[in-house]
Image (cartoon, rainbow, N blue to C red; front, side, top):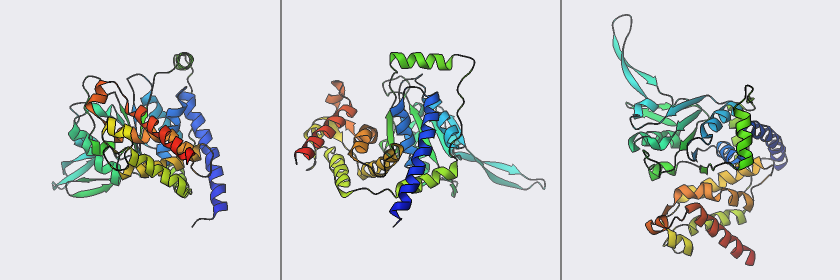
Length: 335
């Protein structure tokens, strides 16, 4: 076990550095503190995130800024209906050397980076979307019988248009589950939108400083992974995840009413790792119930499916999840 005093010192130093990094990102991605916090949470937890919102809300700007501030080499892939898996992973070509000898040579695709920006990921076909599955889970890809390791660290930050937009495809459930968080990007309020216009339409625009590098991030992820998680919090996470599984003994009535299927064990893993990272970003030495509550919609919304009737009624999965969280909190306080 790690020394608690040393761990506390490391977390204090990390929290200060994270504060500087978050401030740098917020300077270019204005008025969306929750979105910035959750995106940094995913990176600090070693996971991937998907940003969901209509075009023009600055999702691409956020990812580009995040790569600069965190000091990661970034590749951007614009997903389109005609995009092929080889356009992401790479392909073999027949090469000829100076002696006339021919042999196949692998040309690495844009996925060989530290941060992959999958822009409008749901505009590509399911076949191309699935090309990311192995990379996201195992940090490696297999091409023509050979396995190639990806960068360290390796994160996918994807952007997605709402599924009701024309020309989009639903992401496979197995791939959605690989995203640690699904982060909703909403329209800015009046004052925030005014600040955005003033900051982005002048001659002088804010440049982002580099605060971390790849080595720093890997070190930060190791420190965060050592944060203690209390038994009470662990039990709360398990109750929350299990209550969102419809038609099971532990199901909450709202889950059975609105969900056709619920989250698997990976959701509980996402809660534990995400709550640790969220606590570090908040300057705490251990995660609390507040961290779980703050991440609940982002962890669970893409791991459940609404029943057809609930969809037709305009009910949102995020709201059902928050209602379940509130119900469980009330039960916990009563106990």
